[in-house]
Length: 171
Image (cartoon, rainbow, N blue to C red; front, side):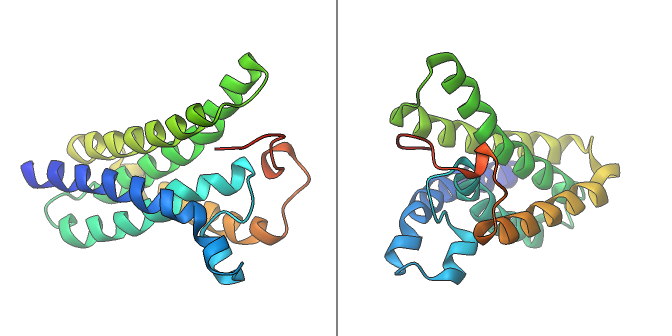
């Protein structure tokens, strides 16, 4: 149990750092379209969900490879944590901006940090409890669907608010 906790803390830090760097990677790459599939190509809330999703997906694969024999529930736990954390970003963002009527840069950063921490906390707790093991297939399917949506909607986004740039700086 000590090892899984240690790796969960490392994962939280990994996603916070790589997610932050990913925010700038599309510009740094000279707007490389392949990089854009995995990193934000604009300031929309949808694109900023990638900051948590892709680094956590990568780290979840590492966690699975390292711990799947000892912790049979790690797949369902990390899938749920990843989904929860990813969808907390727009939930928190739209909740506070609907109250304040504007977005605030420091709150946007706080949303990312809080979403990552919650995602890993849930993953850790659910790995130990195994309460979602019977939903592993469904959770993996949902991750695959979200992955496909990120790829499709990166360059062909629907005309809805989550895909539009906020009026001032976003998450």
